Length: 105
Image 1 (cartoon, rainbow, N blue to C red):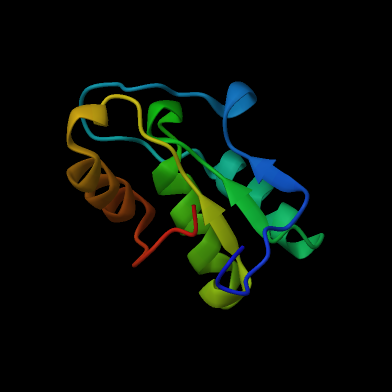
Image 2 (spheres, rainbow, N blue to C red; image 1 turned 90 degrees about the vertical axis):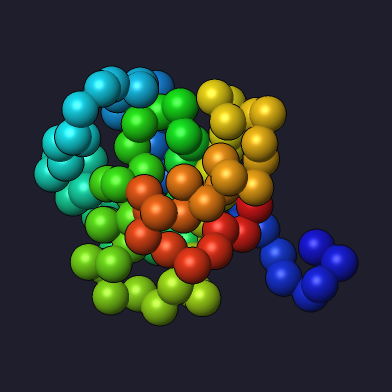
């Protein structure tokens, strides 16, 4: 990237298999997903991919915090779909769900 950072080639994604979608009510945490992301980090994955539409941002953020790997050593991506009309607010919501201060892409 033009700021000197690089994007890790391989990413561990939290879509498709883990897709929960947008469900009403208080989201439940899928511990299997949290443990899976933590294992991916232990195996050396540093690019973690999420999206608002998957409904898995809380698990991704929890796994990152529980991994004890410094946030700056990870490359986190997320995407918005439902909040497309207000991108800044959509990313604020994603950051809240992730429990992070920033995403990389």
